[in-house]
Length: 438
Figure 1 (cartoon, rainbow, N blue to C red):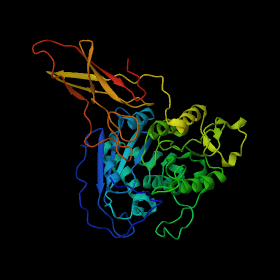
Figure 2 (spheres, rainbow, N blue to C red):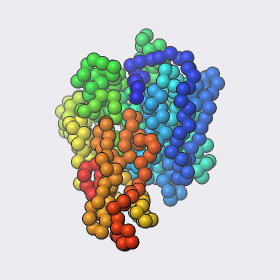
Figure 3 (cartoon, one colour):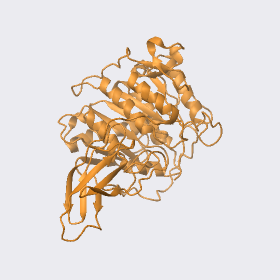
Figure 4 (cartoon, helix red, strand yellow):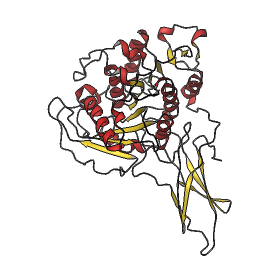
């Protein structure tokens, strides 16, 4: 799967023919909804785009929307098709009565990613249009007015950061994995228009999240320019007093690794502090009295009141709990978890076929399920959970932090059950910290 970082490479702005149509989706049936827009005219988004959204069942009025934005390249764009189906991200959205939105831009491999990952090139307008249309389809017209919590990888980080700088009044928080917006003109990247920093953006919590092999400890190679871009963006923002931090992934290059365990915890804290109780009300200001600070590229944080360094150059963290998770993350990504995951429900047995439903553990997601027959463990689902980029997880993981496609079903066939004998079954959730549901 070919990927590239928008801050490292630009390709031709000509649009070659689409080789593989984006016509394979998980079905979008309630609580999922989808809209698709064709490529626009000059000055509009030049790529077709799909937006898929998950609505938390039972929520009468949404308080926000979490946007999970893929990166550049055809492979990453297609991976966006499953973003709204991610059980772990759904757990965060449900906790805060938010929808979960995942765009999928139909960018051919050799087309210019800048034409969508800069929201000023039409994707910002298409995004706001989809909120109106999906709100109408789902019976949640407030979707067009609620705040946005943004996560973006690579070019998606460029997009999310660009939204912060162009619509700061709507953004509750933004997590930028690898990619960041450009603030100064660069003669080598002439199609990238630099952004300016409005004062309102300084109040939006932002986290930059590069991999250590993207220029921090590995200074050469395809992604070596990611850290210098992140550092420049951080220094410019923090120097003006922005609520911005840096969390260097100590294990990875451009892949997303285990970042979700830190990103979800950080966004959880920001959403708890900033979301208004009533739809349409302005965002709450981020409390500053609980902040912790850390040296840039350091591994130890301290309460702001006791921090001994230059606060104008320090990593900003919203509170003690997040700071402690951050200290674990930047050392080895092993953020501890002591609470068991939710137990599965609605177990259905038809002959040898079992199916069930489960919600993910907010802290650690779902690694796998254990199947018990008559009180004895007989299998795990999946049999050997895999993840080439980090902790093994039930749904698998694509390059842009989205579930594998096709989606993994919650089902099991007991081929060893005795014919004609009644059996009792139990399904147990195991999270990625190894804890079992009760």
